[in-house]
Image (cartoon, rainbow over all chains, first blue to last red; front, side):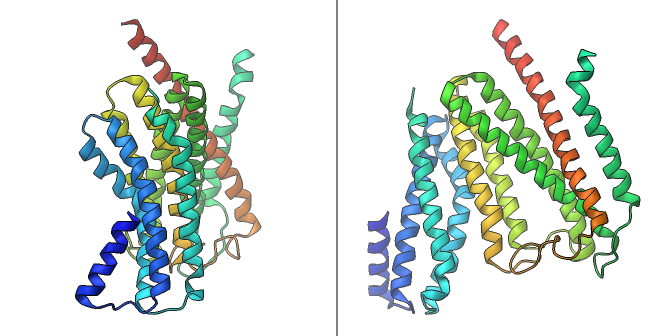
Length: 117
Length: 224
């Protein structure tokens, strides 16, 4: 996920030019966001894979679960685009980081229960 | 005598509810601009959400118990608490919508808090979907309890943390003070706190009935 997103941003800034005002902030939020996404989606995919109709279940489950992460990321990347300094966005970054930690810890604890047969 | 000992809290619940409704509709409330008489909704709208959080929290506790002991009863209990919690969430949404109509002028505003709650309800609707799409019973119980714990954490983040970070009309969010600051006078507190207790007790009562029904259904399905 991290790899894909970095390849993505490299490609886009090569093709269309880079409009990002505050690049470090953008990259940090990109990193944290990919970690969060991969943890959440792995968890949801694990749940969905147990069901009968896993593809549909996956999309229905992941949409609402991912929204909190998505909201913070939207805000962060918007302020990174506008070139707002790191200090101003400290709150969002802290929330994003703690959300990542919570999701990773939860998935770590709960995942064995999904795979136990 | 035995039944009285076991059921005294239900009587207390009834009395408190009667008190809540009576004091809620004709008790004294402070006059505030815009809010006017709608401040009475505090006893109903806010308490619904309190009850829902208590019920969902209990359900998470039983989910953890299930994962530790694999006792199908814990799964039934946790499921019943989620269902009852969702009933209270719906009621909270309806009373909140009413309140919004008479204070903000619309049934639904695109407020962060409101949208968060709507997404939260979607998360819990997906819980029902998870339950219905699992083939066998053990698996259904295990997966849905895992999902329940996960969903509760995300839901709490969604309704407590995120709305606080943006501008919001809802009291207690985005720089707005909560009601406790200056709207709640001691008269209202005398109704508000008993109201929380009363609705919570009612919630546990309803959940209790659901649990008993589910256990009976479970026994009959095993006997067949």
